[in-house]
Amino acid sequence: IESELRGRGATGDIVVVSAENVRFNDGSLGCPRPGVQYTQALVDGMRVIVEAGGKRYDYRFGQGDVPRLCERAVPGALRSSTR
Image (cartoon, rainbow, N blue to C red; front, side, top):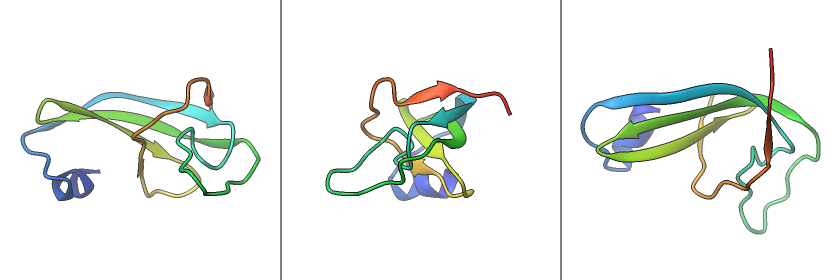
């Protein structure tokens, strides 16, 4: 996440605000992009909120270990999950 944030011009310390296991309703990880099709199956993953330079960033992890920045979350698109 750090290198991705630095690439976006984020400065200062990076602080993890929250991290939680979630079950996303589909492969969009709760952040669908217009015109993109996603798997229509539940996906176990994580939601990690970090703060850098006074701004918060919402990152989602699905099947892999590559985070995806969620810039427009869809309400109700995830559920609590216990793994």
